[in-house]
Image (cartoon, rainbow, N blue to C red; front, side, top):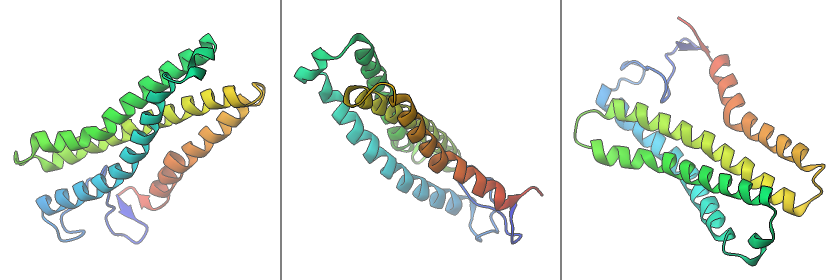
Length: 173
């Protein structure tokens, strides 16, 4: 696929050609890996901080006062946070295990998939955490609307706008 100005597109999920930047396959894999790791660092930091805070909640006196539903939401939130952390740290482990095996292009693809899975799990973690906090902090009648609005915002920022830009600025050959 090409961009609107006729140049081949680029990206971790794209099959870019060696002549779009005059890079070898190894150089392209190195660049794509570096870009991916920079992106993962941002998401890793956020999910690790969120997960760390989530782990402490169960040890507070307020946790025992939560109703059964809120405690279940908490457990789901912790599980989602744990799986998001695993997926977003996965690319680092993946790279370390396959390093030196001459499979960086394939490693980039798999690391990109883990990152996307981590972002989806982070969305679930953030949604569940927001649901729990708002159920405790506000009137239950507005909570679903508030959570839905924030989730819509996340979906717009994380998936809809990038998908629209990808569609808008690329075309099929």
